[in-house]
Length: 178
Length: 196
Length: 202
Image 1 (cartoon, rainbow over the protein chains, first blue to last red):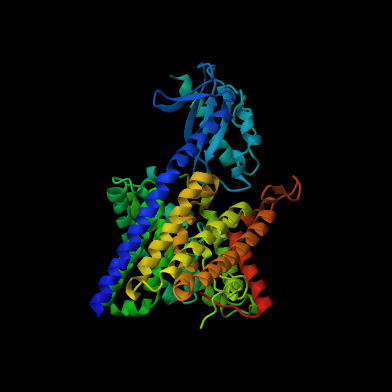
Image 2 (cartoon, rainbow over the protein chains, first blue to last red):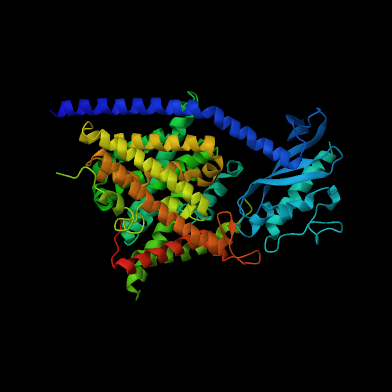
């Protein structure tokens, strides 16, 4: 009797596993196009946040920097988006810096960070990031650290603010030297 | 990201800075259910180290050598949990044969490890952080070590608290949570420990 | 003979056997997600879906599954529902999936889901298992949303999309950090204990 139970048990297990596997494969196939679409939408909305007239994007390698060239509706190149990893207070941060063809900053966005909510995390807000727009590279410093520095750090979050500022400046520097 | 650091930092990050219990909040059932006894906590902690390192490694291998080549990534959840459940069964048999005293000490906690969130979480995170095999091993050591540390510290604290005058509605679980809150606060201090 | 539709199966999950406050199960996602009200509602919904779905299926096949293989069978069914939820969220509400992070797949090992499968769904009919799933799911959701409301209101000054205390509110920062979660839960359980004068452990 025990052997019979074991066999019927194994059969049920296999049947359940097969059904589950089949069901999951269907769900995966069903949702895959939508998921890809979501990813595309997310990247596009990021680029549009940095360049409002953005319509097309193409990867562009500049020296050893991985960047994305951004084009408007008429096919004209309106800028470059460079992603940069920096070390913040709570760990790594991923920045996206939009640079116009003339070399000025069109915008900065924080894609990922691990900063303290309510303190360091405030660097991800528009209030702080807005300061970077249109700055020249020698102005991308915290106010008290360089004569032309124009960035106000977030009070209580100097390390996070400095990390972002230094990261943006390094992007500009590497683009200049190419 | 994390996978570009040297193994020592990966370990420290998992052990302290992102302690699985006190900062990431994973595996709390076992935390509160067990830690009233120091010896049970020690047993559970060691069992977790053993199970986690093995299951993280096996899950990593299954994912990278089986699921990815066959484009079956969506079976990740199912295969990982089944791997863990099987490994725990397997280990239960081995421990019962080789170390019967330990087996008796762990009691119900050994099979319970299957539902220990930390084991599954470590397997998942090892994939998400894109570690190679060696980094994954170091990571699982750090995570399980951090679990051990937190659970032992907590057990010690709870034994002290149990002999203190606590208002009746707070007795038992609630005061345990408040203790955990203070411990968590202390561990938050590790956040700026080093520039990762 | 057990009742066909036992409404108590539904109500038990709210208070008397509230999975979190009384049974002390399923804590993992609770502390991590309860920093945000919107995330908590999402988590509660996902959790209830998995719980109800697995309860129903397990109850439906309960007579067919021999004893030794029941745990692996339950696990496969629960894992399947979790994976379905995972991919649906990725496709339709990716923001929620990103915020839930690793806690979404962790529903698989959530004590509540496995516990109900074992303790209830495998021994009761489909309708009652459905009700039990709904009740437990509701109980879980209520607690996590309540915690989130407290933590988010105090720690961030917001409640979902609403700003509560105006722009000059200096938030009680600790509330949205890990220690605050432990604190709020400790107090909630103490409150429940004093209201019902008993407390149980998992």
